[in-house]
Length: 190
Image (tube, rainbow, N blue to C red; front, side):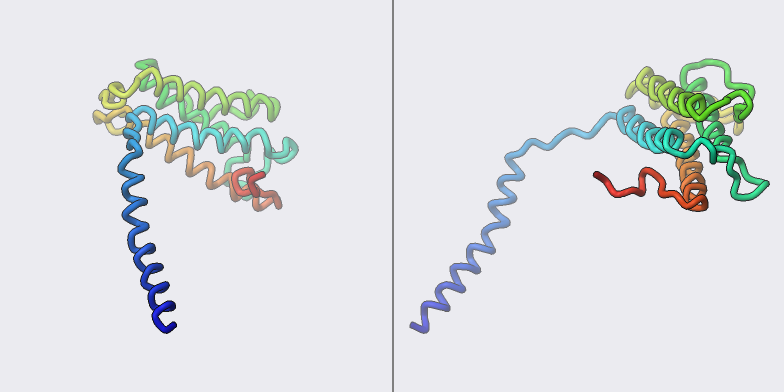
């Protein structure tokens, strides 16, 4: 009788110790997916921050679009217009087109929330189209950064603008919180 609990424990231990071996064998059988190409990786990051800013543009109450936390800061609308407008410095550079004259589209040129949301959506869609047009090979193309008068890769320029949009996303999260709202990305998922 004393041997039964010992025998059960020993068999249980052997089963546990061999389970990882079987799990590893199953993993070896499944094909490993190849890495995404450079343009796909850039595009996913571009679209992710674009999605967040578009969601904010469509969600924030229109009567609060001209809200500024302090007089020295941009309004919510001006933040969106700036974040979207500077994307054309990437898009145009990547496509070999002349750079925009202004980095801050004027608020008075956009009369409604719908017009601003459409502009933000278009700016990110145009950037995504430029990334797709360049493709994997084009991500390594060299262009001259006009601010530094230095050659840079298209992918590096894209990541700079993705990061810039992320900074404005973070600022807009604060605008949401100050007016007592929860940003779309921070809401519980349904």
